[in-house]
Image (cartoon, rainbow, N blue to C red; front, side, top):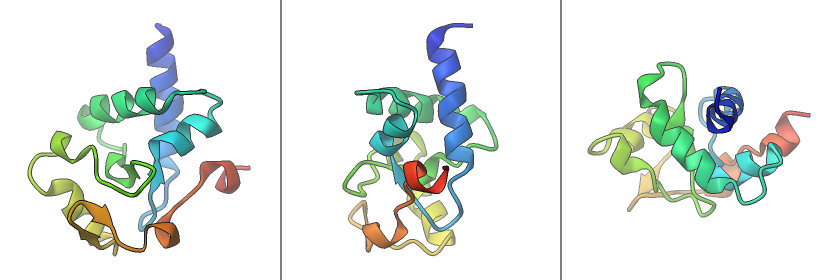
Length: 109
């Protein structure tokens, strides 16, 4: 198993824990896993996760609450999934981002 595959598995474990109606950032996941500068790795893992049914990749956004991964969902699918969980988005930005933010470093002690 390559180190990136192993890293992806660790990332997916964290992403599976994000509750519906909450979001986190690529950097928050990387920081929790001790992957200094690993936000890109988290992004690559999210891009690769679309063939895995139980990865709620739509709940992972950039540090400002922008839906930077939306192109990998096709159309407005990422926004639709978030809206179905009660998260409002305007111009690809999560409204009230801080109130929806889930920090694995706090939540997964």
